[in-house]
Length: 287
Image (tube, rainbow, N blue to C red):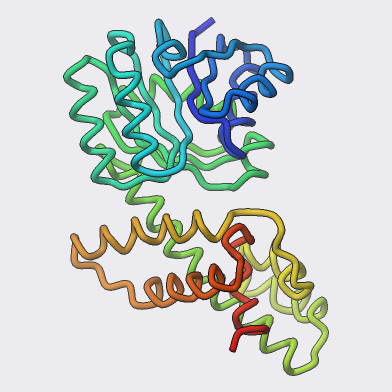
């Protein structure tokens, strides 16, 4: 069995590591909160490591799914000297392209491959093994990690060199932000006009307005339900990455910047952990 390590057992990492174990990989897991790692070990076949260094020792493939740039930097820094010669470190965190490029260069000096591989599909995609993975890095490293990633991914695309996986994820989040604001305004308009939202959805979901967000979030938006899904705090982090990169490459993102401000309004309403579809709350209940 290929020896693997998985660092970070949040709502995404927990099931992703579980799929690796279910596919027969020898998995060592590390999580900052030990109780979560112990919980994982009770449900899946694998071992719990006390530190990142212990987890990655002798691992051919290392995977991480963490929170933000500082978390990734800290974990990679802690594990650096314990990484196996020739190993591949795949980071599924949505982090900055600049960090990905830095880590690619630093790990190359240790003869360790680095793949920036943020994912899309949310918690449901992770639990069902149907994530989309967008990869940046050297092709040979992506291909070495690919069979393991197939345990939890339905689609794996090599976008380009180091940092390009993160750039692709920024595109993903830019598109989602715009769609959700438009959908929020559409549902809000329907509510104000007094028309049946179920019939509206039936009528327009088969046409050009159709989207994943429409299919999966329209009814909960109309019902004012947001205690699930991808949190506003995380979306603002992702949009911050996109807007920072845009300032550096000259891209103009006026709608993204505006929706980011709208999410700030949602946070001020107490919605930091609400699903990103909660943009409609500021239309329905904002001042």
